[in-house]
Length: 66
Image (cartoon, one colour):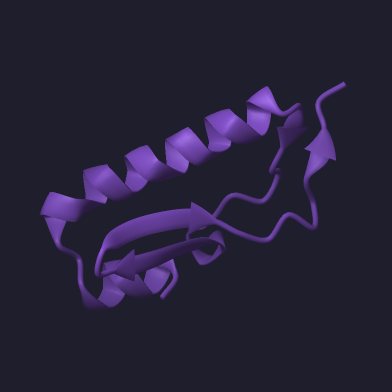
């Protein structure tokens, strides 16, 4: 499910911080590779509940930082 659906349907506040930390780590890695996402929104974050895991998707607007 995407993060928007997670917030609407699950909204387990114990997990929101963990999910956001995974998103931040993913964006840090993307930036280290020299890219910027440019379209970060809840619809572009996919959350798996078991095991808890979140990833950023939709890199159509991503560009090189250089």
